[in-house]
Length: 256
Length: 114
Image (cartoon, rainbow over all chains, first blue to last red; front, side, top):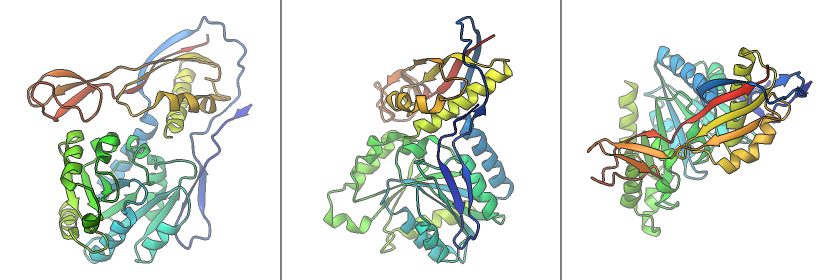
């Protein structure tokens, strides 16, 4: 008998939870079998099956749930420190009277981000991914069940800060929003092209710091367009509020 | 390192299919990992032993083919090889393209006992 689940525990919780749901993730295997009779005369099964179906099936299920409930879901992705949570806080603060928001916070550890959202009286669930560097569709499914969003609402899924791994994992979102900030290199879009290729929206944050930096906004946008000519851009500062109105206008347009 | 998740996904899918086919051991597995799939083969090599330990794939021989990227220009229709997602059409320079090869991640075949 061999039980070989990878030793990683996913924790899904809301601020103030007494009982925290946690489940072992990582596609557990538990089988009993004999390895001794490999004789090289096996039978070939042609499959041609997509490996990502373990995630994509769950993503399709999430998408069906969102569509049925008229929930618009956004998957926010970026490097750590680009200001995802700050943009989210500012957006929720400014628009919470107009839109029904729900938030899923993905981080490897801590409830810090969920606490920041909870302070705004927005329903939030924190997913701690432990050793995993991205959210997967089944974690979002569990978190959404816990949130139980009202119909005609907006679900903000803040992914784990990482510009590589989350690009492979569709969560069933309507839009993927990639955030870069002016304190990063303007060549990020071609250094991490997978993430930009699969995104719909690109927010360039910390635009208020441009006078102090060598970041070239037009160059960054050109690079991003090479990877994905259909990307729509917003240039914002979550701190000063500069450019945020355009982003809000877009958010309100997709919800209605 | 999303490759561990992917390796575990491969194991799950292969085991499901092997059981469906009446097998108890997977002797070999053929993977297709496109050059533009976003998977690092070295990282997958690293994750593989952890993912297969104690499973039907524990002793499976793994072969990997890596088809290069191919795209069709959305503007002029030229079919061309691409190495990077940001490559443009060599004829008309357009970045609008349909990548039809090189992004796949597939289990092509497995060999089971019996």
